[in-house]
Length: 176
Image (cartoon, rainbow, N blue to C red; front, side, top):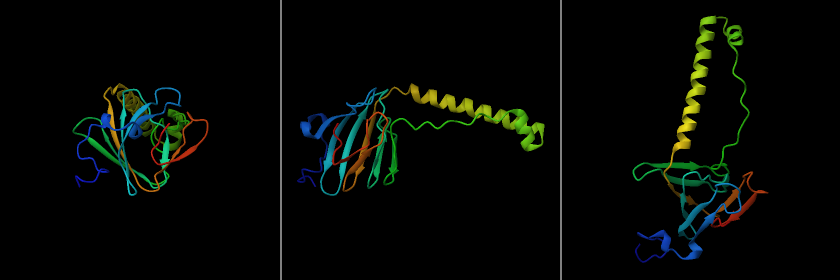
């Protein structure tokens, strides 16, 4: 294993040659710039390390063969996710218009019981407040994130983000 140059044992990513590191999101408006490093690239796997600084957003994209992603919010809490082939992920979520909350009168008409309607209205309000608190908590996170993405052949990524003028498909490492 130590003799295989495609599998670094312990390596400082900042010492990688220029063709194995760069920036993504430079062509997109706003805070979408991410530092990337090609950690392993051969005919069976492409492993990219990404550094997201606080306030930066990823770009919405998908992968033809899926993506295994390991994100570190700190040294001891890795989060492992699998994005199946074609699943659009990362970036700003697509905003779907929310239906206005039912009024107490509407809930009473639906349930036929004023006490149950009042309880449901209270639960719905608490749910909205809790969601707002969660979103506020997410915005307060100020630590850098390290993400390790693992792709499989043919290493095709499709960018599907409103920040780009058109959908684009990239084969291999994502340079932009």
